[in-house]
Length: 234
Ligand code: ZN
Image (cartoon, rainbow, N blue to C red; front, top):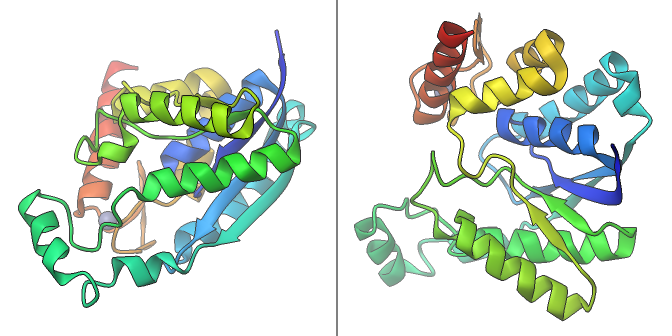
């Protein structure tokens, strides 16, 4: 059963957004991908996107026919907003909140608005993103209620139904690995392990059983622990 709508996936090239891409390809008639370039510390994740898209197309022919255009939007202006020299007072408050001072407040709201604007132009009525309350509850603009409010605001503002799908919202990292397994089997899990990027430090380094990365930063630890739990239950 294919949903005839066209979906636009917020696709950064990491584990979560690659799982979301597979989820969308499994479900929708047509799927396009989008990433934002805002001067990330590590371009490695953006570089991984092309490899992941190419490998998905090569290994999953029934998904390849649905995989449409890729878009990369330049949002380098976010660097101006996150500059702590310009926003020092608020930056101190942000740190008191437990959020890093490089945090761009409401960043996800901006991303979703740009994504919806592009989706409208491309004839897509579904946005798919890897937002998750389970792993990063510190980010209020990734919470489920924020997504629901954005869905209403975007649909009203564009005067057309715009659905926000977040398949990872309430699942942990082990369940994200399981979801990938259920969608594309061992081949998709292997592709995610080898070709996606998650490490905060931008390290590729050696290939662990859960993927490349430093193995110690919070993102690597989350991914590695999730993978271990997924394997233990398999
Ligand atoms: Zn790392």
